[in-house]
Image (tube, rainbow, N blue to C red):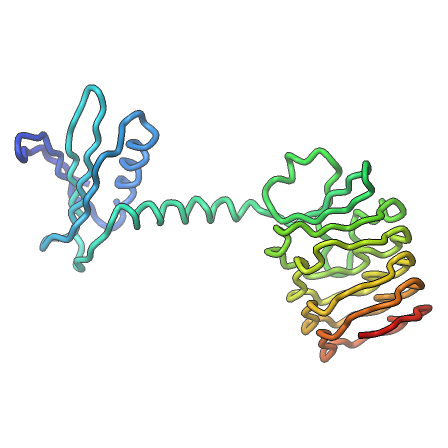
Length: 255
C-alpha cells in the first residue's frame, strides 16, 4: 500500500493506493472509528474513473481529519457504508455460527432432558451430553430411568443429527415430549430403538419426521405398551432395510 499527503479544501488528506489484497485497512479504520474512541460521522463512498474512492471522516475532541483511500481496480462500482457494515456483520455472524453445537442437558431438579443447538453449552450448570453418531449409544441414557419429560428447544431446529438411535430408549417414566417439531430428521439414517421401552408414553405425533434417508428402524417402538395414538402419516420407508421388532408388544391406534 502506498500513501502520500495532500490538501483538499484546507483539510489534511492521506491518499493511499490499495490493491485487492489490501482491502482490509478499510475495515481496520472503520473499527477504529467505532471502538477506538473516535466518532464515525460521515462516510460517503462513490465511484471514480480511476477506481473506488472511499472517504472516511472521523471526529474527536483533538482531531478532525479526512482519510482518503483509493483502490485501483479494473471495474468501477458503487459501494456504501451500509453494505460494508453488512459484510462485516455477516462475517462476525458466520464466525459465531461456527461455534454452535447440538447437545442435550439433563436437569435433575425436574427430571427434564432438553436439546439445544447454540454456543452456550459451557455456561449451563447441569450435565450436558454430545449427540451420538450412527452405531453408537447416546451418553445421556445413563439417566434413562430418571427422565419424565423431554424438551426440544427452538434453537434445535437448526441441528441436523445423523442418528436418533436409542435417544429415548429405556425411558420408562417419560410421559411428555415438548417441541418435537424442532427435531429435523432430514439427515438421520438410524432410528433403531428410538422409543423402545417408553412404557409411559400415551400419544406420539411423528408426522413431521422426514425419514427418506433412514435405513434402520429396528425396535423403534418396542414395548411402548401405553401408546394409544401414533401418527406416522409422513413416514417414507423406501430406504428402510430393517424393521425387525418395530412394534413388538404395542397395542396402538395408528393415524
